[in-house]
Length: 281
Image 1 (cartoon, rainbow, N blue to C red):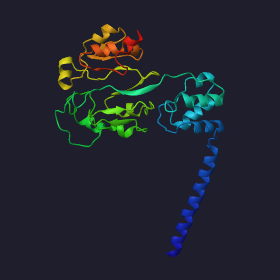
Image 2: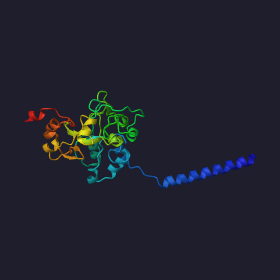
Image 3: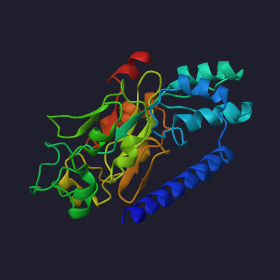
Image 4: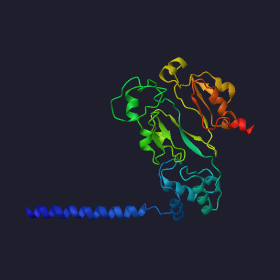
């Protein structure tokens, strides 16, 4: 019996040794040589590995920079590191990095506790994704924020927090790096990365409800009702499926205050100071 055990041990040990030898030679054959330049570039990156640059992490982005020519490099950008990081990498490569307008995540919903009071009680896991599959939402709006904080928990930079007064997630523009984590996690697609300008002035519609005006207003007082007043003020704005969307090409300084003031439900958000346009004139 002991001889059988010893024989089995010898056989298993032999198999293990042979497998180790095969794996060693396979590793040597398919070994990827590290690019020293890419390693230096990787050290300049924030190591967020968020994928906002369109690459599979910071190391992959560093590899792309290290092997890019001047034209290819112009299309590479790390939103988290921003212009400062890209300028450092460009200097290392002997290239120039084009200027990029600052961006920030915005929430296309203004269904606060005041604007959209709860109509039903939700008893379940605090997960927007699970709740989205289960029911329309506490407010009755099929497109509104579920207020369960998936975006807060998944923001790697702590740039989003739940506002206790409104019940909605609030983005801190000073912390937001435009990594896009909130865009990817929100089951209702309420987040968008928009240019914020150097002065932080933006204009956008804080609503995603595509229901007809009367129904939308029953669910939320701040819902867009598709009245098209904004489109009359600025021809660039299009109202489709009962919902207005303001393109990023619309000049917030020129149209922002007027658009927000003439929106009958307050669905349009203008982040500039009121009266600033008059002061400039």
